[in-house]
Every structure is written in C-alpha cells, then in structure tokens.
Amino acid sequence: MRASPDHIFSLAGRTVSGAVKNEKGVACVIDVMQRSMVVLLGVVTAFQVCPAQDLPKTYTEDVGGLKFEMVLIPGGKFKMGSPDGETDRTENEGPVHEVELSPFYLCTKETSMELFTKYYEETVRPGDRDKDGNPISENQKKDVDGVTGPTPVYGDLTMGWGAEGRPAIAMTWENAMFFCQWLSKKTGKTYRLPTEAEWEFACRAGTTTAFYFGDDAGRAGEYAWFEDNSDERTHPCGEKKPNAWGLYDMAGNVREWVVDVYGAEYYGKSPAKDPTGPAEGKLHVARGGAWDSPPEELRSAARCFEEDWWRSYDPQWPKSKWWLPKIGFIGFRVARSAGGK
Ligand SMILES: [Ca+2]
Image (cartoon, rainbow, N blue to C red):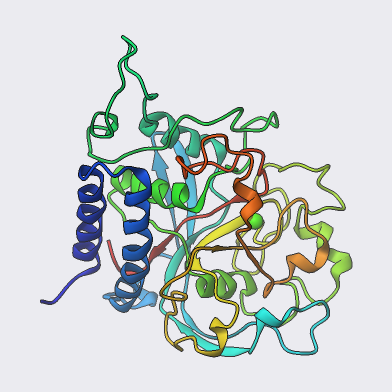
C-alpha cells in the first residue's frame, strides 16, 4: 500500500487511541507512541512532495490568537558532530559524518509557556476521583477526542518565574510529543519534534565552528542565556541574537527535546539520509544547553540526554510520565516536514 505522510500520521493516531482503550493506562500509550513515532518520522521524512523552492520561506501559525513563526530549513547535506580537535568535545559527538536532510520547517523560538498552558488547560485529565469522590477509570479520563491528556501538574508550572514570553518548561518528552499531537489537531498541520540531525543542521545554519556564532565562547552572551548571565532562570524567548537562519535561543535558555532516543555510538552507524535515531532506547536527547549551562554545552554538536534524576522530584512517578517538576531547564520547539500537510 502506498502511504502518504498524513495517512501514516492518522494510523499512528489510531494506534495511540487504541492503546488508551485497553485500559493499561498512560504508560502503555506512551510505550506504543514511543515505538511508533520513531517509525513514523522515518516514513514522514521519506515523502517530500514539493520542492523547497516552491515553499514559503516563513509562515505564521495562529492558535487562538497565540502566534509563532515557522522558518523553512531548506535541506541539504552537512557534517554532523564535532571533530577531534574541537575544545571540550566529548566522544559521543563523533565520528563526524555527513547527513543529508529533506527540507522542513522549524519554529524560530522555543515553545512558549502561554501556548503550552493552553494545551494543558484543554487536555489536562481530571483527578482520580469524580465530584462525588468515586474512582474514575482511564476511559472516563479521556477527552472528547479520545486522547488522554497530561495529569494535573505538581506545583507551579512556571516555577515562579512567570509565563509571559518565557519558554515552556518541565515537561517530559512524552508530554512534548502529546503537545505536538494536540497542535496538529488544532491547526490541521502535522507538527512534531525535530530529529536530532535536523536540530543540529538548523542550529549550525551553515557554520562548521564550535558555536553558531564562531569559535569564541566569549561571545556567548550575545546569543544565549547560560550560566554566566541567566540569573538561574529562563528568559523570554527571542531576546538574544538569532543564528544566520533566524532561529533564536538554539543555544541556551532551555534544552530542547528532539524526537530521537539517545545512542552514544549512533553516529558511527547513522543512515546518511534523514536519520531518526536508534530504533530502541529509553533515554531521549535534548539539545542546545540551557540557562544553567557552561559555555561548552552551548556548542552546536554538544549532546545532552535525559538522566534518571530529572524525574526524581515527581511524586506521581512512575505512575505519571508527564512532568519533570523543578526541572526548569528542559523545553522544546516544534518542527514540521516541508511539503506535507
Ligand atoms: Ca534553547
């Protein structure tokens, strides 16, 4: 059967909904999602129906008055990873390998707290009991679209820093993936997380230096919120200089989830065309460093991956996989395959 990206996406959506119906709960949904979405990305990126030159260079998405900008990343080949001689590099950034990417769109900024709050308020599940105090089942917790939403957040989602203009924080990778599903339904376009390769390609914006602003870490303050200037918190998105392709805060502010699971040796066996990460794994990659990062973590090739302690503050863990309370350094930005829906 010949498949289109939209067809595959709808299949994946049914798989997720089906998993909800078996009443094994969110963990089951997420396990299915985690497996299917990796496959999904590979299929989606394999179908490009429109040459990049025919696509708009930018467009504005509007979700109930909350707007964000998407920029076309034209696709092409680049050298992924860091060379042996790069200062402060780590082994998992090699070997440097050539990757070819299909064109895609990437949000110019990290996902905002305002938009993520809208998603949360529209999809948050009720508590474990109804208004009369009776336990409610997983099926009863589904929203009208049959999609299980996040459990109520533990504590203040903004960590007391306020929401206005700042990036969304403290969500798990699974929660970010559900956000993309929600956003796709709201807009009719298929939004997703970028792959790790897409993220690095967009971050570099044609550069081969350690940072997208050169090799001088002393310039980091012009482009990034990091440990030297952040006052140990996030800052409104887009206040620092963008990279050459108009992307803000690719370095610093919050680390950004990508779709890939982490593989320390993946670069040695990565497909050359549109790689989507290892087929299996439990830890997810987050890129770009954050407000708590030393300069070396802002390097374009630097890789960060989920650590067990990130979930240790969640009193609902392991029952809930939605939140990383007190982990204010993790966020994400959305991508969309060019030429698809
Ligand atoms: Ca960032």
